[in-house]
Image (tube, rainbow, N blue to C red):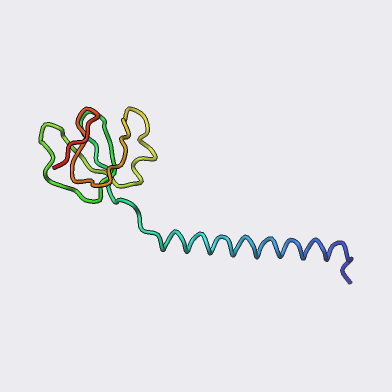
Length: 101
């Protein structure tokens, strides 16, 4: 027979595990159901970077714009100037100023 104190601890442990599992499932479901705000990061040769939803081809050649996926940002935080994400990403940053196409 299990001692009442031990049974109480086991019940609390099982409840905690169930709660943790339900939380993990809920968070995982939210992550899968949410759509990312953007799919790409664009950076110019001056180190200015911003999110964009598409790889536009209208950037001035002298800016040297290159694209990266969203996960790139986590490992490239230094030597970059992270600019505000524009509401309408049809454009680019040039020396800190947003230029719309």
